[in-house]
Amino acid sequence: ARELGIVWNRRQPTRGGIEIGLAILEGDYPSARKLDAARLIQVSLGDVGPLQDRAPVLDGYAPRLSLEELERHLDPYRVRLSNLFPSGDDALDDELLRLIAMLEPYNLDLLDKILAGLTDESHPTDDLHRLIVASRLPLDRNFQQTEQIARALVQIDHKIRRLGLKQDSNWQDRIEEMYAGLVKHDPALPETILQQAGFGLPGHYIFLSQIEEDAIPAAIAGFLKQIEADPDYQWTNEVVFVLGESTEPAHREQLRAQYENLSVRNAVLAVLSREPLAEDRAKFVAGLGATHLVGISSSAEALSRLDRGSDPAELFALLDAIRRLSNGAEELEVRAKLMHLLQTACGEDFGFETGPEGYVPQPEPIERAGAFLARTHPEEARRQLGAASQEWERLQTLFSETASIAGDAERGRALFDKRACSRCHGGRQALGPDLAGVAKRFAPPDLLTAIALPSRDVASRYRTTLIQTDAGKVYAGIIVYESVDGVILRDAENKTYRIEDHEIEERRQLSSSLMPEGLLKDISATELADLLAYLRSLDK
Image (cartoon, rainbow, N blue to C red; front, side, top):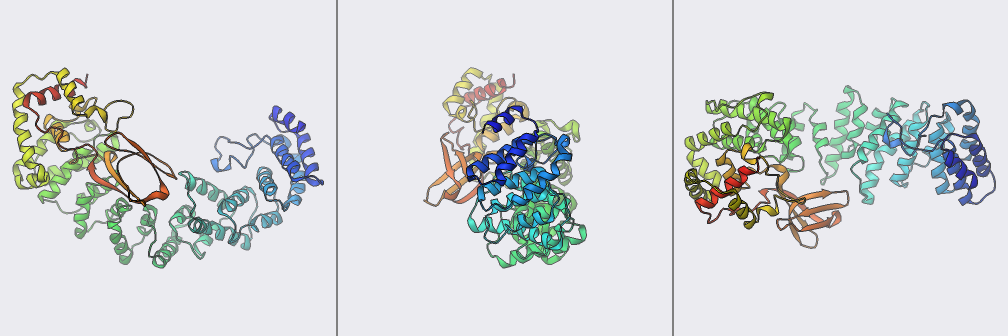
């Protein structure tokens, strides 16, 4: 313990600590003392830790300092350490493996001993520990070792499913980093993985990052085999993109069938948009209302490659998508494409500026587009409003009266508070978007629409998520935090709930906004003028 403290305070490579540690490991001492000895050697080598330009997965397996000054002295230590593994003590072996990773011995027999622990019964975290260590050993693999590693990599996901284990958000990144290290020493590994029984689970897509193009059909075949064998196969976006590499019509049909699977719909739209067919036009029109920009962008791309549309419902879908997209260059670029489609379909120029110079709110051209569609397709306009059409017509009349009324911003602020708007649009825990500059982003009629009909053009991040638990409880709100173990949801009353992942029986995102309708019910022309005056004051 004294030597460990001395070395720890030095925080630099030292041969004395290594010698003492190895002597204890080779002697007849209790396990606890040997664990201290292993730790002493780790610290004597500079300890594990992050290093610039090194994969984070190795932070606990590689020295944080250069061992260059000790390099010519390390080989004898590598030999002695290799002879100590395995010790028969699981805890000690874990630390010996970490030391092996730090010293990187060139020893094929040692690699065999490390891989011997990868069995059908071994725990996936133990498998990862050994595989990360194997990725540090700078030696060519023989055929049997490649097979062992390939099988272990494929089986990790099967074990996780069988044991019902959770994975954190960085899991796949760390696996991919480890895999890249293994492939660096074993170029045959990627294609060997494709030949393993059980290959084709969703998490296996990361192994495709290292395969050659001519191996893609074999990869697709592996995923299809797993899909056909499991009626409850959990499709993911990555699986959709894997099958999207196929040119087989039957595989395209399988993807089209997944359109109804909301969890992968955006990915399906992205694949179908590469070679859009007229028979999928309805899917692309519906995709304009997607909750993710990928779905909207893919749908816009597909529609731009099909014949010009003239169906009123499609025109209004384009307009609704245009109204929702207003944040950041990526959204605004898609918005410009949608406006081009709308202007082409209508045969009108609404004065919308395209290109990067047009990546600004531009409320007036959007208002002109809306007015044009309402005038040329009044029946569809009423259908879009549905049951709210009568209330909407009342508000339109009311709005026209506000033109001659000088609203009072202070009275508008009081009305804003009275109608509970500040509960969601103010303070640190605001659920709704910041309203600063809202009167610049929207023309007055569109601003009125956003208040009166909040679910008409709601942005995806403000859509309501509905969760039903296995106890029969139902929650509706916005997800404010999500982890591997559960979610935190906040509802329209600003109440917060933590729901554990294992409690969730059903979860889906609704097309509606958490913002309630009827906020302008019974409002007078003067009150409406006051409210608009207050919203304009937020621009200052």
